[in-house]
Image (tube, rainbow over all chains, first blue to last red):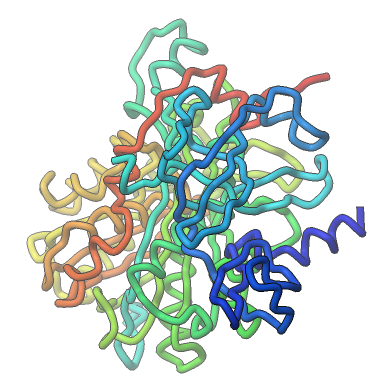
Length: 137
Length: 351
């Protein structure tokens, strides 16, 4: 469990604030952060970039047989979300019925519980996406 | 003079709220436990989804407050969260929120508890912290995922929601605190011991010696000390465990319905505990005009009330639409049945 804690803790800025990187050479924005630019292979240190959290559903699937730690949430929908800034990221959708998810649906990032490590363990928080409030009306 | 009034004026630079989208109608609770017979204290209550807790609620409210404040979060000198449902018994909620909004590491973090008035305590302390020059801004949050024991009277109303306020200098503020006052006594009307999940309460004892004594005393004292009557206020917000208590208390103080109806959300949201009075305040700030005078009085069991007289400024209208309004969240509504509520709030024990 202690190595798990360190692994999650290192991802705090990614998971809480959607912090990725922007390539100083070609300007492409990346999430999660990479050592080498995916577009131009530049390997100089990339500055942090905080994504807006806005995007749209690129594709999705509903999970009925969940991996360990996520069984309590089934059935839930996992989507590939195309962020406004370009990257595709994988995340759970929340605050939406599984039957109402559509490709192209505008979504926004929220911070929610991803899972808990049992009754006595830590609570893992991170990004999920929900239908955009301003659009959902 | 019993009032707390800083030597320099301090106000609200940004505010925000969050209410989960699920609603449990009170008639559904009545169907399960009372065979559908008898009256219900509210129409429905807000219920957090399975991935929501006081941290996630407080964080979304905080992000909305920052969207209105438009400040650098690294200038927030303290992040304080008042709640009676912190996700951990030991480990602060405040550090998670501080990290998520980008206020860490040079900030003060603390969790507060005083039943339903833990949120307004963070605001009072924030006024002092800012006025004393200890911080440029303080983020004060009141949020809860209140739990009522299945079958208990509290189950009709115990709800989820919260509000956040960026406290700062008056010249940057959309509303300025004229004064605040606290009235506390040792009155055990409602409590929860450390290892128990659900709170206990003193039935009718929660009324006269607890809610009404403290709310009315705090309101009457701050109004008398400042020389105001009910007619001087555009809006009044009182802690709202149900609909009946705040309506009766406001009427006893001389207020009319049009002064309290905007900030009385319990009929459609429930009692969000540490979020309750402050959610009423965000609903008022969403529609108030510059120059409006607001009275806000919280109540926390155990027991005490914090009263605030707040005057809105010319900065308010530009900020109102910078984040979702309280009504936006109230309108975002999905009705659930009791079984779904049991699952979402982890009331189902599998042996």
